[in-house]
Image (cartoon, rainbow, N blue to C red):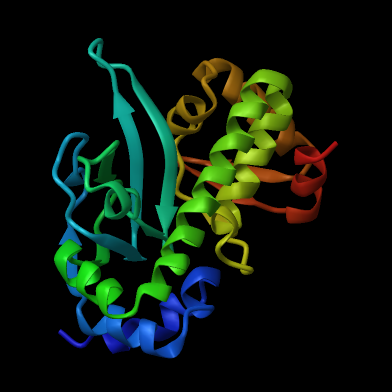
Length: 228
């Protein structure tokens, strides 16, 4: 499989586009193509490390389920998002589940191949650290919002994060394949409350609600709602 054909799509993301050209080439040279069907798990919490992944097409839900079966959704990730780097640093099992929302295509750089690249060129560890620190920064922001921000602001901010690819792309998405129950689970809100808040945004002309999707009509006003 020639992963080089995906370079342009991956280069639309901030992280990959700022890597040194030799590192980009090494990642693509060792990458494997993975195809998932709707509902298929890429990995589950507790699975052994299996490398670094990039979403090429489709959407993956990153989540955790407790013993009572309640699911906490951390994020929905789309192209050109890279993930899976935590296990690269500590060698410990996966911390969350990653499941395909619909048919999805990913690149996988296997764990041992990536460690070999990093052994050969240790300065590339800094690039992986930057990838992980971006996720850590977003996690801190999310924790702060759960404690301090009112629900309408939290909802607007989460929608903005998703349309902006969690800070990894400058091209805002217009249509999110995002069921309201998934958005509610991300925000620790009831589905009813989430529905009311979304209808307020729809009445204001910021979004349009469809079956299993949310279309962003006015990104600037969404940004204002997320940062009052």
